[in-house]
Image (tube, rainbow, N blue to C red; front, side, top):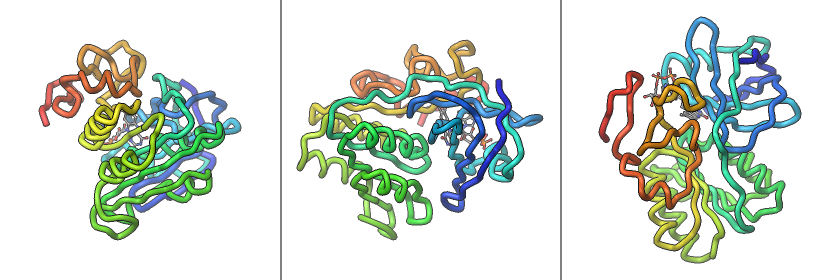
Length: 257
Ligand SMILES: Cc1cc2nc3c(=O)[nH]c(=O)nc-3n(C[C@H](O)[C@H](O)[C@H](O)COP(=O)(O)OP(=O)(O)OC[C@H]3O[C@@H](n4cnc5c(N)ncnc54)[C@H](O)[C@@H]3O)c2cc1C
């Protein structure tokens, strides 16, 4: 655990903030860190950037812990353990990145790195409504082709990211599709890629406590999301019985969806 000073807080939208931390860390997109707020708790967050001795985490306000992170100001400190997990693997030359809701947090970092490596990137990003989108300009500035999808049609095309992806795959041959977002969206992305024979990688979320494979809290189909993931290959995910149907709560109790 290292203490890190918050250098800057960026408001991405009314529900999402990025904290830029003074922390020398080497990480690849898809890896995560455990963020500790003294006196409160410790929770997992994907790294949304890692540049020049600064680590970024992008936090959606969903409950008490994330609300406390949203209240923190530049100069305050948080504890960081990590980076943990495997991260996305770069494959091929023409790729698509599909993000839904706050699942886009690790994908801004991924798009930046893919573009730096000279890949052609389509970033398909979706949210319920225009005000919930983020990292759209970041991806455009990195040189990605951005397709915005909103459920209510308030920005970009009206409809789901998965429809936009299916259209894209009908027109172009892609080498790999990367995704992070609601589990139902990722399940559909894995299905579409499987049908088209396109490689796919998805970043999964399960309740986590230790972050490095000891506590067993984030088990899925005999694997641990923190140790064996959080990024899994689409072919492996397609065989998981618990993906899209079962998760465990903070006590380890099974919850079916
Ligand atoms: C590998 C990984 C990467 C993540 N990356 C991000 C990210 O980049 N940005 C982001 O906003 N959120 C991310 N999350 C989710 C984030 O950890 C939770 O949303 C956060 O802990 C919520 O805490 P809370 O007290 O604010 O809300 P709570 O009211 O406690 O929880 C709201 C929901 O968040 C989830 N959650 C709560 N505690 C945990 C936990 N210890 N482990 C996993 N999920 C939890 C549960 O689904 C819960 O229903 C990630 C989770 C994982 C497993």
